[in-house]
Length: 234
Length: 116
Image (cartoon, rainbow over the protein chains, first blue to last red):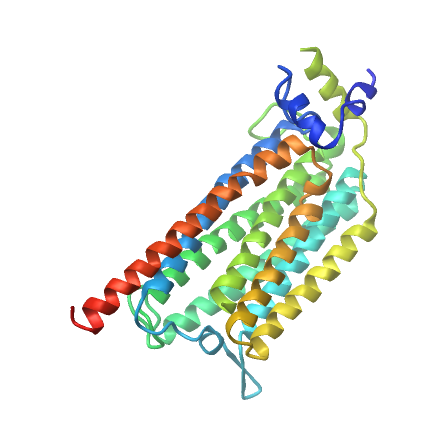
């Protein structure tokens, strides 16, 4: 084989008809699990888009003033209320964990088992901190009287959109954290070096799984970028 | 069949990795951009300036994450096209709902506030 047969394929726009119209495997060289993860993420994009669009529609069509998020999400730091402090820290924690994940993928492909495992573990801990801070934020708002049907700050729709959107995102983070811990264990055990077969499958483990896991984790960070912009900053 | 075996064989050889510098640069840029978008709120920019800055930093961050952390920059165009074209459907949906929201708030102002 030459690996050349793949390398000789045209790159760029010429590769599109060659991939899709030649009665062969589409997305050449893309492992099937990776393609399936991308398609799942595409469908997830549509779900989150529906939530955010419905939030946009609800906020744009209410005649009551929308709560001032800068004030609602402020946190007292040494007696001074700092606007959006917790949200800013959560954003930085999530970006940090996204960076460690990107490096874990890189070290995985280089078959550097230790570094890959450490970085996945660091990513999982970052995600855990994020979920913890989100739980703190929820309990703080519930304490202040924010409910899905009303709140003391303004338009009643605020609570339902807040709990729905951040709750759905937090669920994604939690599921991601569980998988990160499972995969950290698999990496440390050397599954991806020995090609040990998985629990649910007879297929051999491969470091490409780390990239697939990374795609999911970066997507969670990506969604947060949009939530941060539209829900907290707008 | 032949194609499949070739793809499988291709998987055996170590995949190409990228230099660590790229990841560190993107990581740093994401921090800086997040800091800037937080500053938009800190300085309480209002109106068109606020919205355009929020959208600018948001799309820049999303683009960097997708292109480099999610490797789309190096991915085959067939996959990139399958992933990015559906976004136009979302843009159309946003447009429809903006029109719908304007109509809803218009009727609410007429019937609730002005009393019909």
